Structure formats: structure tokens, C-alpha cells
Image 1 (spheres, helix red, strand yellow):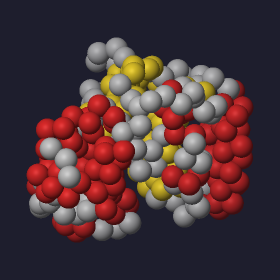
Image 2: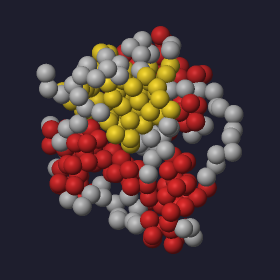
Image 3: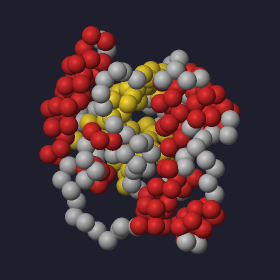
Length: 258
């Protein structure tokens, strides 16, 4: 059976995107999202690295991946497919203080949380249930927050890395070289790359590609053509978008949009 992907943008507050997918062989490279990722794996098991620590999904639990934290994903057993349902929720769905706690403990072994996510997906299957889906997302926030205790503060604060990330975010549709960023931030090129990679677990160029793919998928779900999505998300051209889109999501922009 070939890979199957169904993605859409429902008219529900706080929900950026919904994705239902079944993958035979696809493995996600390290990337980030600007949203909270609420993941249910219904078939198979996914192994993933989050913030440089390995985790594994459970069919009886919800996986919560925070925004801007690098993660990848692959079947825990080679050649065994996995099937998943994903909600991509706006960054403001949870407070910023929840990011570190979710990165440390992304698996929520709470039957109430799992049931709530399942009900949201059921409501999203019927356009008449928009209000039910919205109420479900708000209720899910209340169920999730008690699980997200802030970890003890550590001396890992990297102001220079944060400055580079902000610069890259602000100029995502431009071609910014490390040399230009280093000159602007008053840092040495090699040191800037090293600090960013150590802080976020992903190289600056990988971070930029992941953010651009994320933007492109939103545009595609808003009825923009692949060529338009490429131009508006910072890719050189449609072929450039297609190459990275397929590597990240396991399909082409055209198929994803359809």
C-alpha cells in the first residue's frame, strides 16, 4: 500500500492544520514547527528525537511536541508502517512556559487526554461540528496543562542563539547568509553556528528549511499553488520547494494540496 496523506485547514479557532497519514517507509528529518503538535499514533510505533533525546510513541498515549523544538520521526520497526492523526495548534494555545516542560516529557499517559483528542478528530469529520471541535481544543488545554510542570532552570540560556533564531524568523523569505548574520550580531561565523546548533539541536540552515516548509504547507492548504507557496515561503523556485517538501513530509506539494 502506498503512503496516504490527508491534510486540511478547518475553520476552527486555534487549529492551524489537521493531518491524517499512513506511511510505509517515510522518515521525517529533523525539523521544527511554529505550532503545538498533538499526535496520536493509531497503528505502529514511531521513534523520534526531540531536543536531542530519543522518545517513542505509545498507542495509548498522546504525544505533545512544542513549537520551535527540533524533532524527527521514523517507524520504530523497519518496514512496518505507522498511521497517525495530528492536530497542529496555534502557539498561543499553551503558554510559553509550557515549552520546556513538553520538550522534557512529551508523552501524556492520561486516558482523559487521549479521549479528548480522539473526540476532536471525530468532530472535525463533520463541518456541522465546528463548535464541538473548538470546545474540545479548549478543554484539551485544561487537561494538558497539569502535566506540564516547568523543569528546574538550568544554565543553558544562549542569548546569541536566540538572537540568530529571531533574525532568521524575521527574514524567512530572504536569503540571509551566516556571514551577514554574524556581522549584524557581532559574532564569529563558526561560533554563531556552533552556539545555535548546541542550543536548538539543529543547524541554522536546517531550521530555516523546516520553517519554510511549514509556511508552504499552510499556504497550500489556503489554496495557493505550489509555485505561489514556493515564492511566498522563501524557496528559490517550485523545484526547490518540492525537493525539501518531499524530504520533510514524504510527498510533493501538489499531492499534499490535493
